Length: 168
Length: 204
Image (cartoon, rainbow over the protein chains, first blue to last red):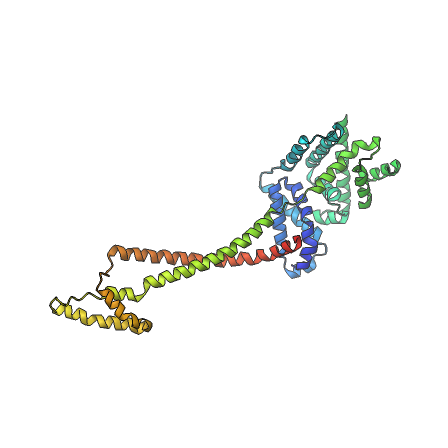
């Protein structure tokens, strides 16, 4: 692995990789491990393989996805740690009632996202949180552009409907 | 506040999955600005949730452990080297032929009559010493000192000999483990140091 590529392209996306791993595994510790493993794997990439990689970010996201899915499938998933932490902090702040309600609803939205089917959840995360292009998402998840758009549309629609149900 | 119809148009494209990244950024900016039209406020939590999630960061606890690991390996290598030198020194001291020579030589009491048996022992002694000296010429100068020691009670008891053997065996084991540990440490440390340097350089 080229040191410059690692410094300029891989290291800066560690937070993005972490969030993606966290989205899949639901565990802070598992997500941290995944990022470490991906970083190590990228660092050890042979020069000839490095030359074939056109988009390092998409490649890293794919590695992260695969490693996270392996962990999520092989181990008991501890999903609630990050959400619990946020709920505790919001519960302790003395914010105005409206702001508190919005915060509460934002937490509900996060919960809705976690309940989405895997494809919907991952496509929505990569687009709405990581701001990847449709092409990058397709590469990362090994699906077609049309599938990206369909999954994204369904995911957003599901979130909107659940949110509106909350207000009723 | 932005034109409400423009935002509604963006929002429709967003639900359909047809909006561009730039349009989606505009929506996020609008809904997180705090100045949102009343009719659209119900969608604020969605973009609030996205903003919250984007703020989640990788806590580099593992990188810290890599730093600690590097330092530990260095200290471990130093300690191992020191222990190795110490062990080698002890072993050398314990296995030096001088001791054996001293054991081989029996004290000679001039008052005791020179029986045939005693004579043969006395004759054997210079031969043993000579053989040892041939191998360790540097110790020739100490020969008379060794002979002086002969007058003291230097013969080791079986318990002492057994203890020395056990110490030798233990030192041999420690020595082999240290060598193995150093080899393993060197392997891991070189790789960790490379990544670590990059992290430190970037953070620094």
